[in-house]
Image (cartoon, rainbow over all chains, first blue to last red; front, side, top):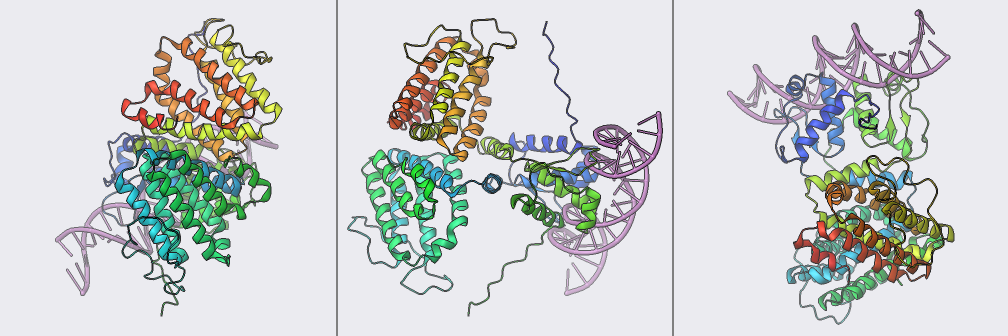
Length: 279
Length: 279
DNA sequence: AAGAATTTGTTCGTATGTATG
DNA sequence: GCATACATACGAACAAATTCT
């Protein structure tokens, strides 16, 4: 009894077979980024399918961010290096149709970011630590405030980043855009030090989604500079804890910092769930 | 100076415009799951594009999991309820082409799972707690071991789940498949209690990817029953901590449990990064 | 610098298998 | 069983874009 088990045969479309073949070639490494696929007409001969079928398959692969094809390119479609664009798209869709609340997104960031910081406190190199300090210095510069605190970091502001072409912002006062960039650079340095690419990509994606939802409200805040100063102080505390190797403290500080920064925009019914992470 | 800023005009394909229109209709809620799109021929009239263009757009939408079309369906393509399938696909691709190591995946699970447990310890209802206990009872039943420990949980094994049709496994001994299902049910109950859908989906996706990588090795282990017993004991300790409302303890126990379970399959060079989370 | 050759983008017509009534 | 409408698939044709000569 029970030797053979049959599955219902789902009618597999021709274009899916094409997608599978090319996908397999890419994911297995037989096709590496930068290499070219055969032209559509040659693919249609090699695979013995019509051109429309080939094109539909290429569209799917393009939607997944695996290849790109340009009109007139004598070579075929180009195999792309992986980018989290498809992941970003999926999560954005998820956020819209599943009505992911801002609270959930911020909570997710608090979890992943504090984990990254916990790991970074253990695994960071001195260069990575210097990169974090540099980013905070850039935040200070963008906030237009002389100094945030009495921290002993000897690194001065990185060259060139910031006050070159911010449209509509004056000099020496506040450059919201540059501040945001420096903030991103800080967190990038942290997740890079954590050594976990998955955390890196997910935090990156979620950060963009969060920012898209509240960028307007942050820009409209009239106490921006005060917010920036507090954020800078928090970051400096985090760096100090990382430098001291106290991961749990650094992680807790980072959760607190993110809570303080984003909580005003989260629905009141959800802030308690955020505070549950502050402990 | 600087008033108008021009962007390079990227030639936007016709099919992309079609994708955007339909996508917008779905994400905005104008089209809800279960509803039907117009037929391809009608879309091609409404949008004044050719048939192939419509089809390529539908392929992209199908690849994103937003619609599904079947041959012969008198209605058009069906709008689907959101499923994390596209997210899963993206992450799987990421894991393959970026060579995400098993260590990174397990680390990610440790972070998200322990966060979910921390939240669940605060926010769970009694029903959700009962569901977790039920899942652990099912794990005990599947492991074929009389009792895992002297824990005082009064719930007996849930009805029906488990020993009905495991192929090739005897009765009363070990049913690896049922054990896995019960384990999944436990973690599902936890993330449901955490109240964060994003954590739920991400843990679900990553769990499947991890399992796909090491399922064979787990099946081949000859001390499976010992592993199961230890896993059950760990889960019972976690439940006890959740019941007591001690979130940090529950989270720490869960990280330890996952480390014990998966560390043997992780490269030795990576286990230290995992232990960094154990604190 | 201009034109030829090739490739993708798009349309259209046709044939086939399938689901619904 | 039959008619209808649909998706699937093929392939020819033309337009637009790119590269090479």
